[in-house]
Image (cartoon, rainbow, N blue to C red):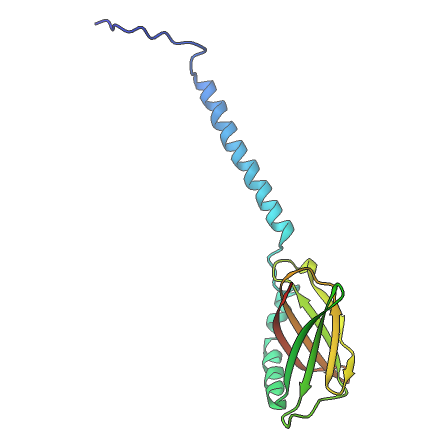
Length: 167
């Protein structure tokens, strides 16, 4: 039986070698892109929440005891934010159970950027008035976590974590 067709193949025929080269090329490009994306993901965010996660886990019971001691103090901390030129100033007012200002503390602020630890900033927050502590940092706009620590005689007596939006 003969076919009546006017089809005439043009170009080189599709051979096994061509198919092999196309498959190797396709999967080679896929592997290269996956390698590049994985390398960039690891370079921009290491995936660690703590620098020493094992030590943080071991110290967990101490953190619970410190939180209970902090609750027993009955202190209240109010944070306010203001722009001071290019810097963002955070002011913390600390009051005890009776509503009196708490004095004699050393305060420090830690600004934690949720997407990159490279943007984190630590600043001292000296006393501005009785029970009022303030510190300023030049922060890019975005959503931040701010942790303020109050120490007395070098020991942390109160820790407060809050969110902060910088415009």
